[in-house]
Amino acid sequence: MAPSSPRKNVSAAAIAVFLLVILLTPAESIHAESSEGFWDGCNEHLSGSYKGACWPFINDDKCGRMCVGENGHNLYGTCHTFQCWCYTTCPN
Image (cartoon, rainbow, N blue to C red; front, side, top):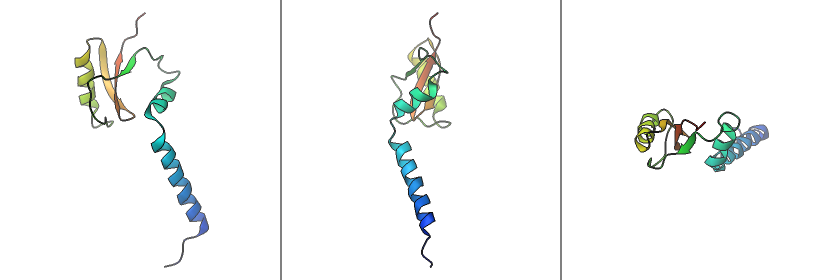
């Protein structure tokens, strides 16, 4: 088997560093940056009763049921950054 080229090694190292940065970035900072400018922050909060990791598309229904059950003002809930986020209407 031929040794791998230096270019492949550098590419593999760059991918590994990129993945480490993504995995080690706190979920709260990702969520805050992604929602900035779209939501004003008054209508979203973490679920107080959802336990465990919240996987998008897998646990969204469970998260939504938990959010609506927590508070009558919650409209729905979705999984984001492995956490259950509840959404409610903002006061005028």
